Image (cartoon, rainbow, N blue to C red; front, side):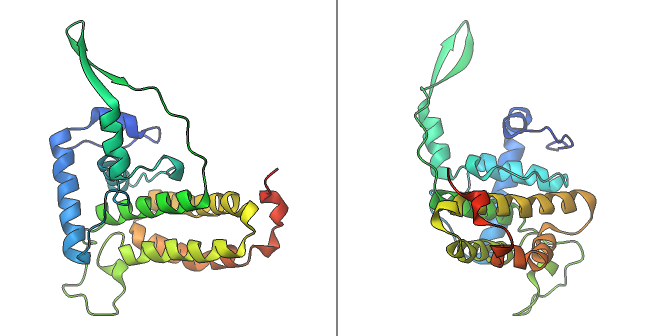
Length: 231
């Protein structure tokens, strides 16, 4: 048993500190295997989500306490490897201490980086949500609704990603990042609220909310771009 995730204040650091690591590794390995069996695809380290992110998403979805995760904090496997390399291990006072190198100055943030991190986060949800939904039909024929078979279908989450990719091209470049971050965060907040309050799978929720908010993404003219203008 890995343990419950029942506190809204749980952070990735808290989850990682309290976790049974062998159980975590088993959960992640199983999720990756299910994802690979279904989609027959693997991603390079600069896209694939970090194990810590995968387990955080797993815990939140398992407990129906999905948070509106900050996309700026998303890390892929390459980031995770770099973090481990930056940590020097040394013993002091008969105990193990981790010493991190001085934090480098953050790189300028851009729409491209936000979209890359969003893709990695959505991929994490797809990996840990690749298990069957309760009562799934025994066979999945071509053209079937994937939300009737798995918790968070990758094709549904990719539809969300590509809709965002298309929508931002209609926004003036100076306003694009702020508009994207606000619009994406608002939509993912709805996912979180509905998952907490109901029994629908996350995939079903994402699919329904996409339909409801289609105009928000493609008819932003109702709100002035000045709200997002860079000063």
